[in-house]
Amino acid sequence: MLKDTNSFSTRFKYLSFVIKLVKYFFITNLLAAFCFIVLLFFCRLWILHWLGGNLIVETKDLKPSDAIIVFSGSPLDRGNEAAKLWKRHFSETIICTGENIPNDFKVLGINLQECELTQSQLIRQGVDSSKIQLIRKGTSTFEEIDAIREYCQNKNLKNIILVSSNFHTRRINKYIRPKLEDIGVTVQIHGAPASNFEEELWWTKEDGMIFVNNEYMKLLYYWLKY
Image (tube, rainbow, N blue to C red):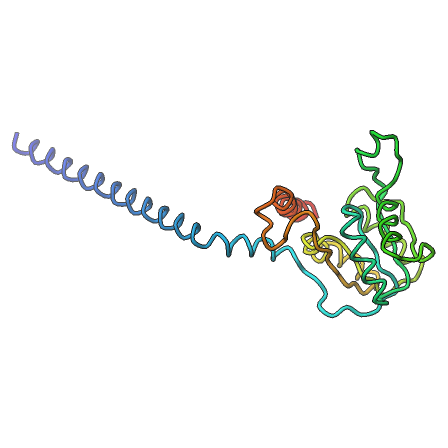
């Protein structure tokens, strides 16, 4: 009987120890999670700034090139920035890419490809229409780069400036630049500022949040696929 009592007492002490241990780890982890959340709150602006800035990868000192090539999408912003480069004599030629027709235009029965929209904005900004060439190919960044590779080889281009949105430049630098350098083309990258949100405060506007979210999702998709 005494032996059974001692055995029960031992098991009870062991169970009590386990319960105290679980409580300790639970409280410790709860406090750690709370501290982490507090830290995130106080560092949130720095983190948000970093998330936006991390997407921007540009060539610091641009040099004159054989051509300025403008990716499709955001024809207003990218067209404006390409026009500025042209006026500063970084190249005599501007090439616009993209075969998509925006859905809003399809509704109106207007069959203008994205490359033509960029061309139109360039002309509005004073670029000589005879200096603009169109690559009517590409429904995505990767399809466009295949068309650009082919164009560079056919035209013997050795140095180009790629123009796209600021937050698009990291993806271009990581996944697009190597495909062109493989064929001996020197690539410079230049970003166009967004006109519909302030990039340093991208989280304050819906357009900015959508752009940053989409870009990180695309970076993940490219990493998994390519």
